[in-house]
Length: 165
Ligand SMILES: [Fe+2]
Ligand SMILES: [Fe+2]
Image 1 (spheres, rainbow, N blue to C red):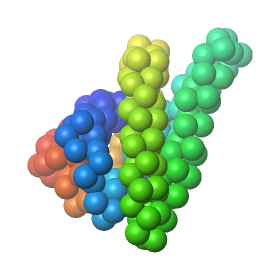
Image 2 (cartoon, helix red, strand yellow):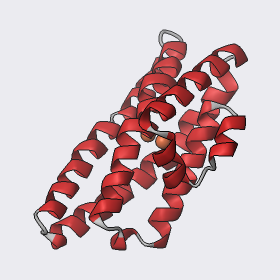
Image 3 (cartoon, rainbow, N blue to C red):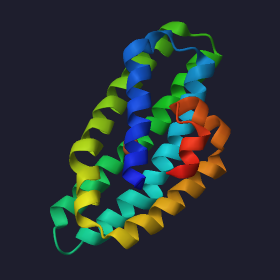
Image 4 (cartoon, rainbow, N blue to C red):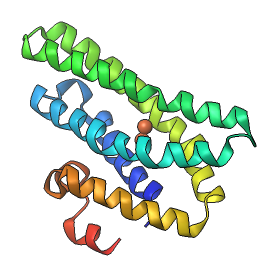
């Protein structure tokens, strides 16, 4: 499995959670999800997919290199927004918590959609097999550092499946 296929599985898990019951998500569940996004999912994108793609296109297709950077900037926005949402939850300000939670999922869904439309296909089409397989191993290391237990619980990916991909 390629790193972007792993990321697409993550997106599916997030999408299912967001579609089923976004506003009923407890503070505990949201904190875990946000931690996963910042310290695992977006980390793989920020440290692997985005810089490799930017590097590939820089000087050749400058506009696309800029687009990659622009989409990547959403991560900082989501990190700040998620941290603020958690603060409202800790303060038991549920009105602001739900409002921010709603906004967080809206931005995250749009962001993930753009990655699936504009980032991941280019990675699969343009980056050579050897590079992709090297970086897929790196991505798996990031997942292991984050914690396989937490990763499988959040995504629904089984540990056995993770071992064989
Ligand atoms: Fe992302
Ligand atoms: Fe993503």
